[in-house]
Image 1: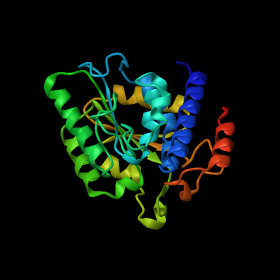
Image 2 (image 1 turned 180 degrees about the horizontal axis):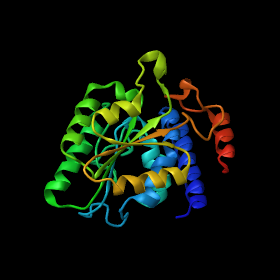
Image 3 (image 1 turned 60 degrees about the vertical axis):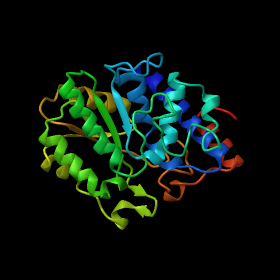
Image 4 (image 1 turned 30 degrees about the vertical axis):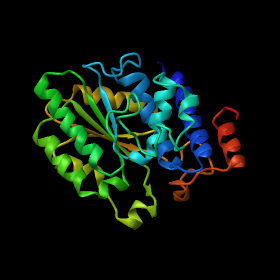
Length: 272
């Protein structure tokens, strides 16, 4: 898929996020929208996956460690054809398999149930070790949030991945600078991110997390790196694509009302 097509697909993914969270009356739009371009690049260009065979043995796996952003993963999977978008619109409804956080036992394409911050990143490292032991060519991708980096388990997993030379593991930091209580730098700074991961033995690449050429180039560089796991530090904008949500921590975990939803969908090039 070329870059223009990826950009249009990312808009579709974002529209699914906004509509589903509006229908649910709750959810986490800000961090879902900031990650939409990265997730789109993974599902529609980078990863070896097949919606018709979601459990094929040699598949690549994506772990959404910042599980509260589940709507962006669900939406991407729906657009990719793992299930219908109409089904995803039952997000957070009683009896729906689309819970607020991803559930690997109910939703095809979900590789790990996440939500407790840091654990998805750690599980991704375990999967990468397992693939090495099994001789499985599948690669492991994990998306973490910058607020999530305040969890100690992140740094235990980072040490383990470097020690085990997990060059089949790629982590992406959705570095939007904000968390539920405000700016990272005000709550508990995570900077300097690049220096920290380099000191832990990782190959580190910094990019604009909304530029598909930079995203895809980073994945190519990660694939060619041997003997080290790769951390892609993706500088992003919280709420990207919806003007009134951008860089506003108030939209970390709030659903748009009807009027706000119509405005958001229009900005993304669609209609209700």
